[in-house]
Length: 259
Image (cartoon, rainbow, N blue to C red; front, side, top):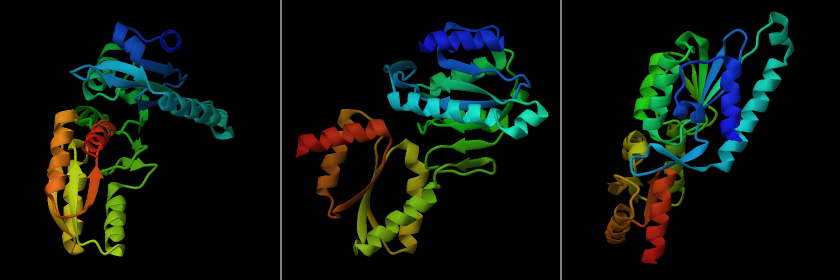
């Protein structure tokens, strides 16, 4: 059903030079004035060793996409837009929670179709996956970005529907002080590398020591098991974990095995 919807949307938007992959990854809501919101949404989960292929459908993402489309419909039916004869379209890119595939889709979309950079009026990023290359393309587009997750690095054109990680970190430190915890262990992955640096700076100012800071290089079971073993040797009993979903799942399995 999704594939049929994608193909129909491309036909109505009169896009050209499409690969089979792009047809499957992108949904276009046409705009008569060529005013598009670019939406990066993980409709599928990642799959494969190279994290380039798409896996199973994420039902929650389908619900969020439906909510966005309903909101877009309501905006286009508003008196203000009808008065000026304008309508806002959308280009929804299925990121599959992978940086490589998202970059490939965005590059082909902007260089291999009739969608131009000037057609984009904003970006909604609904995928918190670590995507340094995708973020680079987004910066080059030079349009406002709205994140739907805790943002670790705010820029002049980036805002979010949730607070920044700075507020989250401050709240964690305040909770530690409330429970009279003076030392903690940290575990994190590459997605939260910047946030951990900020946590360590705040911890110093609030007299909270960090005994061990462990970066989980990937979400493999071997790394998760090694992380648990290191935590068992630490004296601090409180663990602050900032991890992406895949890493959390592997860590939970390792903890269950250890117990």
